Length: 193
Image (cartoon, rainbow, N blue to C red; front, side, top):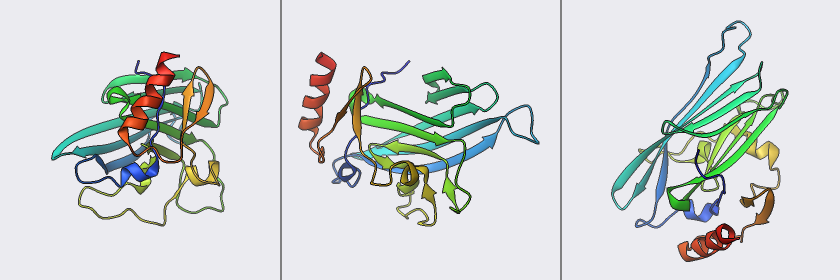
């Protein structure tokens, strides 16, 4: 299993300088994969994105599977298990983790139900360094449709607050964490305790 201590990065980092990382969305897909196709009992959600750093591009693939019937939740990244749990009756899933020695923070947020009065609501969202996947630009540089409403807007009406989780304690991050030295210092403090 991957490390579960999350170090989300402020939104300003996503609009990085050319020498820093830039993230692009490639694909998002929701499939019904349960045995009961008339009343789908299991969803598989897939996010494909890439990180471009100094001319090199690294692809990532996150897959989330959620069974309504058993409550089983499973997250994989690039074929490796990140998280598995069984929470029958749970209507919200929220899981954070870091990769690449703490340089990329991910937060998967999912909701089984959604308000009927919100059209084009995306019930499954992956936060990549504090930025919703649905807001990441496409590889060709075009912006995603502004008509999509992310579940993040419902669950965090005052804006997404990147936090650091360590042993069930929540430590708010500074509002600007765009300098890597500050990120490394904070990460080192938390992992040393």
